[in-house]
Length: 158
Image (cartoon, rainbow, N blue to C red; front, top):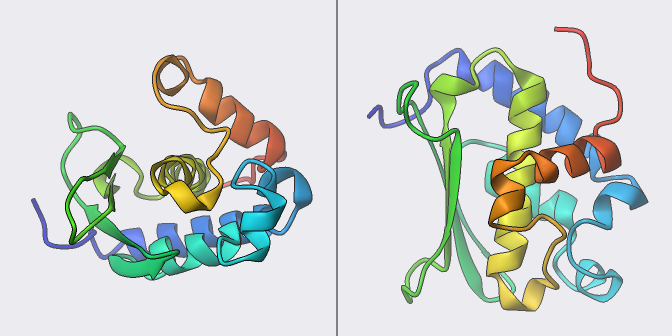
């Protein structure tokens, strides 16, 4: 695996973060992440997304939990993304994004980042949780459909 995303993924990430940031300014999209109280007290989803994903690989502390993101080119057979809540005292939530499946696709990258953000919210107890759930919703597309419906109504032209 590469230590970081391919060079051409940076422009994809930049474009995706523009979509994510715009989406997370809307009340409808914000409502997928946490509660009004947690969003007002350190778990604003736009801030968490920017800290965790905005510049590529990151390690940030939010609400007393250490969150990490790692962008790697893991090839076409590896999952697009994976979020793990860990019992480790060093890292509480680790997000892995497979850039090789998302290069040049800002739309799918934005959906993936918002999707994984939901899992982060579910893995950090003080965040207020998320409507993005694990299990069947991860496999049948329900989570992504919810994100498109509440956050990304109009797919941009590429």
